[in-house]
Structures are given as C-alpha cells and as structure tokens.
Length: 80
Image (cartoon, rainbow, N blue to C red; front, side, top):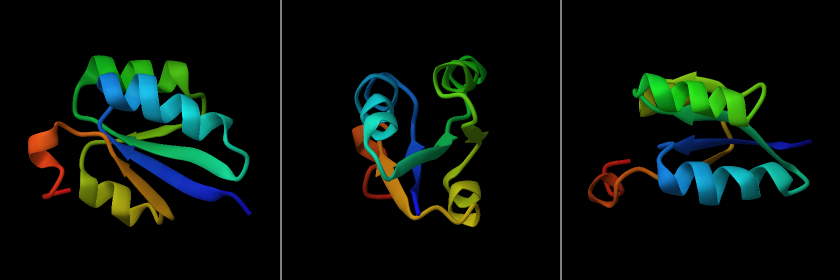
C-alpha cells in the first residue's frame, strides 16, 4: 500500500527538491499538490502525471492524504 503524499507549494523547493524524490521512492505516491498559481499548477500536472492540484491546504487535507510535505514559503510553514 502506497503512502498518499501531498506537497504544499510547487515553487523551487516543491518542484525541484521534494516532488522528484517523492516520485522515485518506492512506497510513496505523490497524489496532490497545493498551489493557487495557474502556471505552477500546469507545471505540476506536466511534471507529475496523475497528480491532482488543489488550491488550498484544507482541500489537500480533505483528500485523505497520509503524508504532507510543507514546501511553501518559509514564513507560512508554521501555519501550514
């Protein structure tokens, strides 16, 4: 059973550091990305086929993920 994983933020950290590693680790399944930026949403779908993009953290948590990676701007980490 794969661990359903979501990333909050698809900027530099989410796109270049977290998503590629999650995608290559057996047992992790990158299922969701949180971003409100349309260009980053399109990039996430292009980079990670099958990923669902949601617009906020509440939508991610409602999606029943098992693991959340916080890759939002550092000033938002505690909130997220």
